[in-house]
Structure formats: structure tokens, C-alpha cells
Image 1 (cartoon, each protein chain N blue to C red):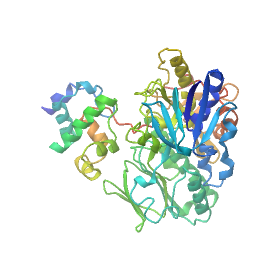
Image 2 (image 1 turned 90 degrees about the horizontal axis):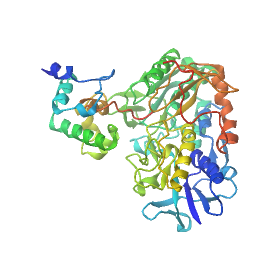
Image 3 (image 1 turned 90 degrees about the vertical axis):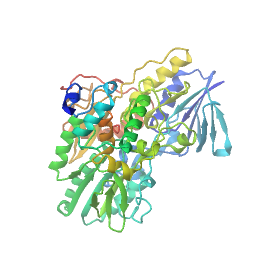
Image 4 (image 1 turned 60 degrees about the vertical axis):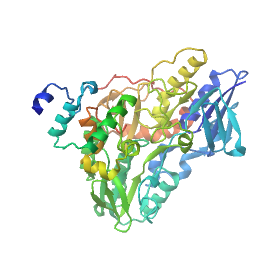
Length: 411
Length: 102
């Protein structure tokens, strides 16, 4: 028997498992998927928890429900990947799993300990919160519920981060939330980012930047955080700028899984270097990487993992047949950006084409406005939770092409 | 003199060199002069690292990468290249704008 081992049963790993099970002959191949956590979180839903729109229960389901019959799910930490020996050592019972093919889908995680004073200064989860973990988002909801107002600073510590539009969505929703509560005039909102604008790509940055301005949100650019002073309640940048806060909402440094670093497979942020078009490891031809775990210069987001899926599968199957991989992944990403007051924005882009305005054609549902607020984009976003659980994770057909199309976009 | 050198170099809309392979030390010095950065050995240490790293990876190094892979720490790099060190270093080294990904 030959074996494919998938590390990580999040969005990417689960999708690969569901597709792969139909492609491989079960008499020849065994598929094993490993994850340390039994709960699958619908991560786009984390954003809504601080504002009481979702509770943690609304975004969790057992991982097991999404792993198809015939695939062995092992719940365990991964101690080591040993690519030279084609095997993985698990923490549970020190079990060793040899593989013919390895799919790494271990994702990216926040590392607040990378910033001085963020976690260890006394304010963590008191008036400093993240919203990238279920605990952090729920604690922040508890704080916001009774907050009377003050200065809220939202800070991105370092790029890249998972879902680069999430901080903007958080700001837009916070503006809406404080309006609803009737305390918007008592809250000052500041967005401190290491980028030189509201977003990385020029056209989108200027449109999103002017939305921040319209909503009265102050933008502090090129802010590279060096330290959190918990006593003074201020964040300090390496170039000696200081921003005081009453409430600090942080998007901490993101890093790949520690096992990637331990196994010597990662770059400076523990991301696995891969060919950005074929998704194959640069170093080991039987290792393939999906989603946030790799170093592809595109967004770290579920939509990207989805667009990678078919390319990765085709290429791995080609490799099994002794064929060269095809360089097909174009960096395609698209996301609904929740902008508050039941409005949303859609952006669609890839390695070479920045988000552009226009219309996004979608048979049966669309078109959706691109780079422009509309209620339909908000519905799209809210509907997506159902699509995620019922179609996307199960590897079902989505009405999106893997490669980006220019149809409907204005240049 | 400086302007003569820069006149023959192609820059993008944000002032980064279009072709990293066209870069020479003289061009680097001219860009630095135009940006009012006075280059010392420590600056060159960072610029040389950025060039070598770019040749291997195809991407200009991030701030994290520079401070982890060289003996220049965060404090020093902000003294050497104030106002966005990763961008400024890439600019002088003739590399494209560091994206910090997206």
C-alpha cells in the first residue's frame, strides 16, 4: 500500500482529503490526515464574534464530520517531519507515519509573544485583545459589551497576516457597532499599520482609505510596532512614535506552525518555500503545500486555498504518473469585505492584477459589484458560512474558476 | 553628475528600479544621494545582503529577514534607513518594492 499523509485538517487539508479520496484507488492508496484539534472553526466568522453577531458556537463543528469515509483521521500533535526519510513522527505514542506523498496544510497562527509587552505586560485579555482566536474574539465581545468608550487602537504588528482585509472589516464593523450602541461620539478609532496605506494594492488602498476617512477612522501608516507599554497604555514604533490606547486590538505577528521550523522546512516566518505556480516544495518533489502554510506571495485566506486546490491535486496526480507539474496557480484571491451597516465590498485579484473596480459575473447569483459597497456583497458574505460548511469543505463544485478572469473588470 | 546617472535608469511609478540587473554601486550611490541618505559601511552591509538575498529568492528581504540574517538589529536599521527601512534599502539596492505580501 502506498500512503498520502495530509498534515492539518483545516480548510486546505480538509478540501484536499475530500477531493483526493475520489482520485486515488483505495486498493492501492491509504490516505491519513493528522490534526491536533478536534474542532473545525469557520474562521471568517471570528470577525463577527466581538460584535455579538456570532457566538463561538455558531462557527464550530467537529472536524470528523468533514473527513470522508475511508480516510484515517489521527488527532495528535506533529513532533517532526523528516523529509529525507519520507516520514512524520507524531506526538501521540511517538507513532511514525511513512509517506509516499506529503501534503502540508498546517496553516498560520498568531504569535503575540513576538512583540515586547503585548502578552507579557499585564494588559493581555484585559484591555488588549486579538480576534484571530475563538478565545480572543469571545473575550473582546465581553469587553465591548460594557465599554463606555475611549480610544480604540487597532494595530497590525507585521505583514503578512492571515486575511489581510480582516483588520479593515473589523474597523468598519466597530464603527457600525458603536453607532448602534449610541457611543460612536465617545470612541476614537485609530488604525496603525506597517503598510504605507490602508491596503497593499494601490487602487484598493485608495478606495478603502477614503472609506476609513469617511467613517472618521484615523490612519497611522508605516507604523512598525516595537513595544507595548502597558503602564502608559501606549504602543511604540521602532522609529519612536507613540500611540496611546484605552483598548488595543492587535493583529499579532503571524507565523507558520512550529513543527515546520523544528523540521528545518521553513523560512524566517516558518512558511514552507514552494514554487508559487505549481505548489510543489522547492526542495522535496513529493511534498506539496496548500493554503497559509506556504510562502506564496498572495493572501493567506481560505479563498486562496480553494483556488490552489485543483492545481495542487492535478499536479500531484501528474507527478504520480511521472509527468511534470503544470505551472497553473496564478495567485487568485477573492474576498467579500464586510463594511458595516449591511454593506459589503468584493475584491478579486491575483499575482499580477491588483483589485479593480467593475462587476464580478457569477451565474445565478451575481453580478457582484467589485471594489464598491453594495448590500448584495454583504449577503454574499453572510451566505458564505453555509457554502463553506456544505460545499467548499466537501470539495464540491463552486461557481468560481481557479484562475482569475478579467471579465467585468475595468482597467 | 548624480542626475546623469539616474537619467539612464528606468524607475517605476513609486521610484523603484524596474530592472534589478541594471543596478551598479554607482547607481546605488546616486539613488541614496537623491534620497538624502549618506551611505556608510553599515548601510552597504545591508544593501549587499539585500542584493544577495534577492538573487536567491527573487524577493527583496523583509525587515524581519534583514534583522535575523545580519548583525544589524531593529534599532540600528531604523537609524540607518529612517522612514521605512525595508523599502528604503530595497530602493537603494535597485530592487522592487517589498510587498510584505498581501
